[in-house]
Length: 334
Image 1 (cartoon, helix red, strand yellow):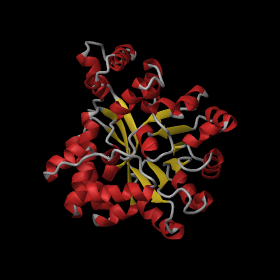
Image 2 (cartoon, one colour):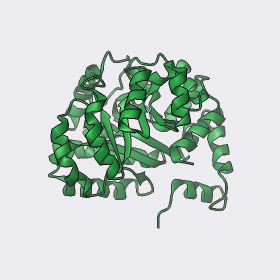
Image 3 (cartoon, one colour):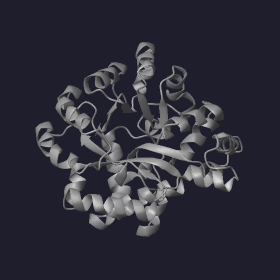
Image 4 (tube, one colour):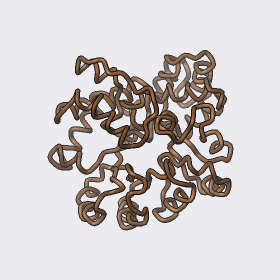
């Protein structure tokens, strides 16, 4: 039987299963107002923008590797700088297949600890090849899910490098999609590596296979880049997309067409595309009615859980507890 975190929490509160979200909402709001991170952690949430090999905590990896890993304290100058920090401070402590699998394990452990009810973890084709092909790869990931986060709804996402050879990827899609394991598709890494239109054939195939269409866009680019990607690839969701806040017209269009932006506040600050929590563009996007969610991106780097992201936005004065609960429900699809 599939038992969700919502059901468990309602039972603990003495609320009949199926009752409205009032009691959970009350706990969520009170936890924010009392600045209780422990209270937030028991509330069902989503994490819809999470790179699997970077989705755990520094603490978990540090304890396993018997090292003290300190999080970064200054914003990175670029994605390259972020990657260099990750390799030097995290990845070198968990090398090889064993280290890779420990980082994946950490992602599921963190999801359970933070009561993530919907978890979209993204994986690259190179990760499937690394573990011997699609079948063993799926078996390993599904086993992690069952062992460490059985109450989380696991939504695997296929992530393509923006700089990839599109023709080579396209040739492999039938074999990958035939397993019907991936639930969504994404394009990530360097937003300017090649035109978004290069991926139209891939996204047509993904749409035919029933995947939710997503892409990283509008993190470093423009509002027009977001609009182009959504229209050309027929996206349902955008990872980041915060550049949309510079265009009232595009925000209205995204709102009218119910295009969801999966926003990662700490990631945006640490990569220099947002100044701080108190001025983050999620405020403007929310005010224009754009569906937004709150996510971690690369937790092993940015060191902020989903619960901490909610707390950061509340403590900065950017959003009210009620508004943040609305965002939480958007992520859960409620």
